[in-house]
Image (cartoon, helix red, strand yellow):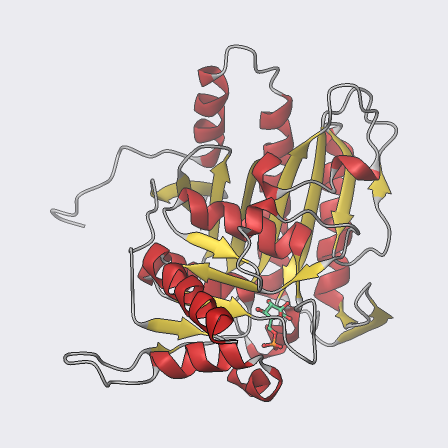
Length: 342
Ligand code: P6P
């Protein structure tokens, strides 16, 4: 249109990954090729989600996954798609998926140096309602002398080489971060099929009066968790306003909003789910890495740094509080006070 400023400084995800690779002289290109396989998965899943209602991909596929959830057709398609993309990349030695009870090994991937954990369609119970769902991924590098065994992925999040998620909403939004790096957001341009850098160097606001938790579980919360959330709703300090509540029930959507606006997201361990509900390998740890690299924090229900939590089993869960730096400090302070009070 007349006078519309055309943005000519376009950075695609492909260019971004290549530029990252050339920064590391020792890079073999394997990580880049693995990320291209991830990129292909996100573009394909985005395509199926967009058409799901049209081609009746909604509804149950009649099977159930490792957590016993009824698998929706899109769950199954997305999971199969992700597995084949990792296999055909030839750079992934083993894969953990929320949809698969056991580890998937790719022995044919000779010399593969990476292990991937993923939740292909997190929040899928919201799919029929048109709520944003997403793919969460975490990339581990195999131990030097390893041929690719389960132990290579049962590591703390501090050892992750990269992590992130793609939220399938009004458009597909990819958020990715690498070890010690910044957090970068890309938006899928459906027209040309490219992820475009739209949110360079994302930084979470230091604080924000928004809390995001399923209050329907409050009956099961420990007292210190109850008292913490009650304290957010008070206005007994001069100038203090009660926090706003925002909860979508799709971790990727709640995480993306928290990353952009600030605040605190929590899925605490409680009497109903003593180990929490969210999975360490493909929900808590990858999200914790994104939030820490964006200047925020993430802790488990014992206030341990989430990235230092080591899962014993591939589907292990943890309670989680993650968000703005100052908001997580508030959670810690509150838990310390109540611990002293005990
Ligand atoms: P609840 C979706 O099923 C999920 O795994 C996450 O995406 C989400 O944050 C959480 O569970 C929602 O759980 O118990 O509040 O419905």
